[in-house]
Image (cartoon, rainbow, N blue to C red; front, top):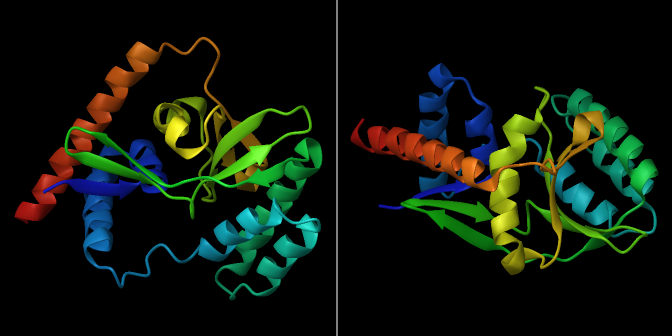
Length: 208
């Protein structure tokens, strides 16, 4: 059986501590097997709001509306996300681009890159980026994001040709890209190791 995971969930796995990774994969496996699962819904209004906002002439209003409609558990998080998003957007002034969905596969792991999760951007200078937004509290490092950025890089011809991959740490208004001196061969070896670890945990969850 092929293991399946969304790109954002794979980023969570890469960032997780070893003692947490088994439980994380078990939850992710149950979520993908249970089509009625709501585990991914907490940040979904903000995720959808960003996609609408970058394609809207009134970006600020779209994001404010998302925050206004947040429930009491979401509200403090959404306020932080709004602040970070506004700081980033005011600096960069991009416009949204449509993207396609794609499933990237390595061995028996399928990583889903959904057009409901990632989005495209065009900047005033004409350059384009393929963006995975990150909403959670722990701050990301370049090392954390390198595997998913490489997956986006290898998938961009199917999702948004010619675009540069970027992870947007929304709370901090911080774009993260692959470093110019990144050794792709070494990074691919690291991804193979993460895939192997994920599959081991997935198979252990099947047997449990």
